[in-house]
Length: 457
Image (cartoon, rainbow, N blue to C red; front, side, top):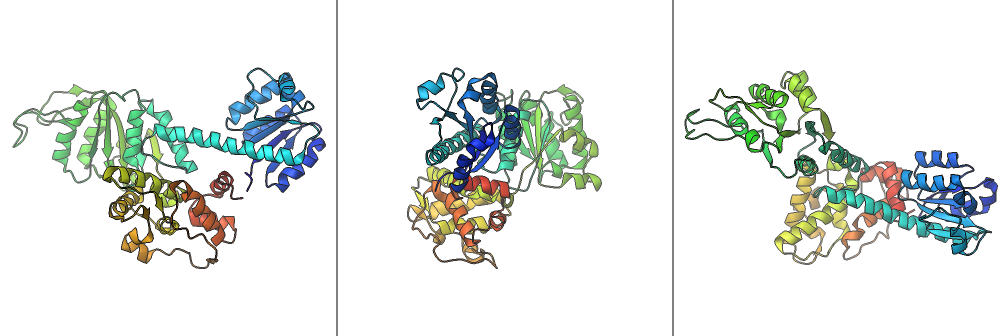
């Protein structure tokens, strides 16, 4: 199946490319024709094209040079095809600005079949450009695996704020990756070569938490046989992650606020003020705004903590990431436990994708690790799933048909997981894309992008 693409054609008058437009639509592409440079740039700003087709004379003019330059800036993944009266690409390229990256040259009159094939090839390379760019983003945030558009925007925001001194408050359910984000902020910050430490504020009483954070002097309390630095002093110049800050006792909140405001700490049992320079990232699973309204959390500390707020979505809100996370967790577990896992049965993915995952990615990781350890062969099957997932998960939601002919391969390579899962779900819904997006727990725009990437349209 050819790669579906959004194709921007710059041609004046537009009716000269009407046969090409019809031919591209018949091949499943989505062409749009504009007659001027400004209209082209407006179109690119509104929707990034996969492929841009422009006349060689326009490309050779000052306006054409601007079109190529601006299109590469506004749509860096897009590929450019030039229409030229010259059949020889070398002759056509002479009219182009130096170092112009052109995917192909098509002679006039345009052969629609050849043009459609060139557009399909260009769209495939544009998709590769996009995946490579996104994969670079992922490798910058080691341990965070996603293809979810919202999550990718969050990671880009993390990258932007990491270079600042602002306090960051990370919100999200248990297991959504709050500590991974905190570590990413530290790794991308100017403090990356200094210490990073974490403390869970839940379950520690006020006295113990104060000693852990601010330290104590000899004789401050029974058992204090020597001076001891707290975490703030130990990581001076680095980053401190305060996990579950919503569970911090109220008296400690006032002391933390003083430190955040003035960089001052006072060890337990001492009157000496010490100064530290520590970047704080805090996180909580609780609704901290409701806690402030209920008088359970200091409003002044809340406003000091939330200079930057990052809200992480639950796994059920980014279900398209489940196959990617499964692949990642299998690779990590197989390496850690010396196992050889080469594939996974598609029925397993259906079970996993249908589960609600109250423990989010942490719960999924634990399930996959146990499956890898206990697997008897090189393929993970439904029999390797925990009993509660096999017994309670409804593979086909009520009211939706389960037509015959769904693939039932003995094994599935990791690279095929997402594509086959989307294809199977689309077939279950009889091609209804709205139902498919809803079943997968993703937005319609995300689904259309995935269909385009995997050639499923």
